Amino acid sequence: MADGALARFEADTALAITGVAGPDGGTEAKPVGYVCWSAKRTDGAELARDISLPGDRAEVRDRSTTVGMHLLRRLLRGEEFPL
Image (tube, rainbow, N blue to C red; front, side):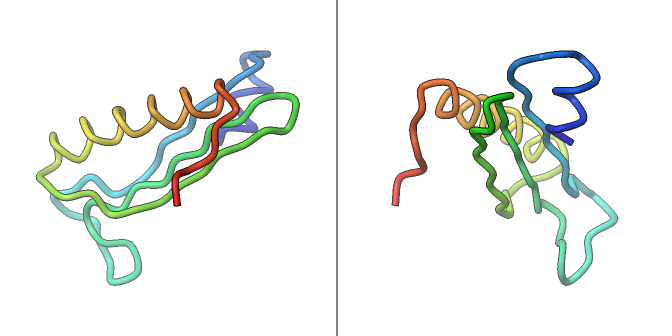
């Protein structure tokens, strides 16, 4: 998705978020709250993460955007994930 956003919008940086916010649609492999993020620059730098977030639909969506903004900040600053 991040690659598609880079190409479609002729951007130099993109953030993509997808997942299962609920309340329905979860599976054993991808339960409600499971979210994937990808932040990418045209120079090839990329950070990606996937985790399960707690909360109801609104909370998962809110937390997803917060995590996405932090991921984008780390990418733009050239940072890695903490261990």
